[in-house]
Length: 175
Image 1 (cartoon, rainbow, N blue to C red):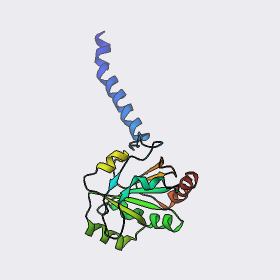
Image 2: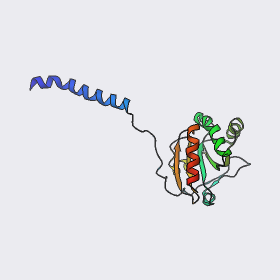
Image 3: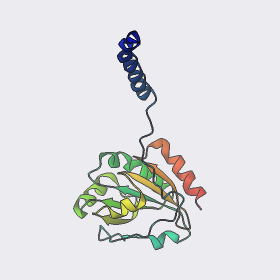
Image 4: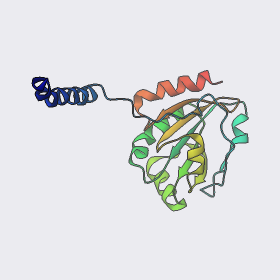
């Protein structure tokens, strides 16, 4: 029995080492998906952040036309990276609303002047209440809303060129 106890620490080390190696080779999915996918968009009434654009009112999402809802911030580096893709989506006919998280009017105006403005409406979510009610865990994040106001898809992180066709297909399917 004493001989077995001598090998116990080595056995435990091998098990822990194997678990660590497995975690490095096959990391778990660390994305936090919204529980709101498949459910109606929560009732949101966000004041406009910019004087020349309406804010967000979810009653407008039941207009019969699918749309995208982009959660972004002017201080977000990945949001800058996705800006050209949002412009491509707009040029392809996508209607994109936005929720600006913890932002200011001046900063968002400067962001849009530098990166283009794909947004139809921009709601002001300084307290992050709307972002949390969507189940959004960070910025940027984009939701596809169908013609009845139901969230049918969620894209976590910045939109890249290879994501544009997928999002356009999701919008088409959401009609």
